[in-house]
Length: 385
Image (tube, rainbow, N blue to C red; front, top):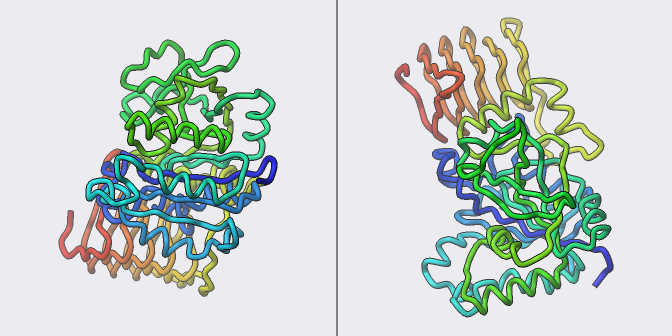
């Protein structure tokens, strides 16, 4: 075991997954494309990379194909498989639980977690979810944890009350004067008396020894939960300190939140704060030609990836790789994922187009700022909406 070394468990089993359908029907929230060329999980993996962490386990509730396709060996984040290191993935955890997979029987529910922690040979473990996207300095969190000699440290952010009120998956952190965590309260049950509140970021930091003891106790008591929920449950029996995170936050807990997160990144300062800080965000490199803008293209206030062909009008939109916008087509206030095609004379406003969507000539698809229209992956739209 290397002193002060850290491993990471990512629990990609967020309950908000169903509230992002159809985009998350076959991918976890962490695999959602953001900011024209990234995936949500790039931020968490970049945090890991900047902290020098070499061992990561991902527990994925459903299919992991989109995650595997993106991260591959993990080389972009210096996480290539090696002795006692690398990326370890455990997909279809929900199905395995229902079907009685040998790794999820009632006597050994956490076998994969324990095996990963023992093989990682680290002193500490960081546990995160996949919905909260934060540019976190993990080493600063570790130092805070060590300095306060806590059993466990969680991360929170002070946010306006409206960021959590009415959001059923959010939890508020209750603190005492010594920054000890008194408990977690569901946003639906919180008594908001101030303009701001402490939003829990679903991030935990603790020793591997402590983590293994919690897993042992949970097994003995027959408590079977995703590991991030398990830590919340057992936090009541431990001294838990609270680390205040003050950086940018994207919380992908709904379609509206996903849309607003991407639109917010059209602001240059917001984009720089998240992706161009000292801890820059790393993603898988793709060698593609630059985006081509024809003489008839009219582009304003938009964010583009590479490999696009733009011959029409695009305003205030986020455009991913290999998107085609034909002559006289109009795109405004929208998110166009990889491979989208907007044909001649078509109009797209306040929409989210998943990968490889085609909007045929002359078709008008128009949502609103508060209710963007979603077009499913590989869909062809032949009539106006």
